[in-house]
Length: 188
Image (cartoon, rainbow, N blue to C red; front, side):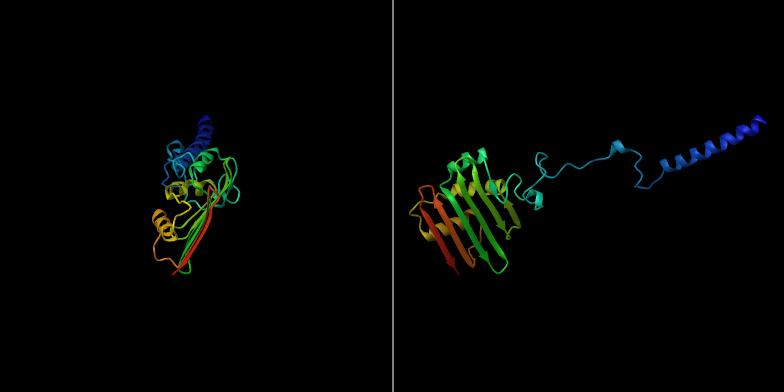
């Protein structure tokens, strides 16, 4: 009689062992038999900031800015002091659907500014800190003065921003640190 009881107890145990054993040997990719060996891809970018300039998500549309407005960016305050511009609005159109539009305006010397870049030529949209940092070197290198001619200004802009000479409309308005405001328009 003991042998019968043993057989009744061993059978369910063996059945369960068989079921679990088959599940562990499965080739089904949805069953993870080694969870510690999974490779998790790193976040995009360099790991410090998961948002890249190519990231056009709503969350990245200015990061620390509101609609391109940034307040108290101390790093930018030092850079802004190096620029000869307090305002720089550039719009260059190519055909009906391609344009390069960059707007920058210094609000105060404390690092308050507004910056936006809409570049359908290179498929970039940046606001706030990203827009300012992306174009700071180009602005610094322009070196416009009060007596910069219209033709010289247009050529410098096209070369500096790597834009094609065959534009439909070119519109530039800038204000120098000395308060001089210049408005240039050219149509082809």
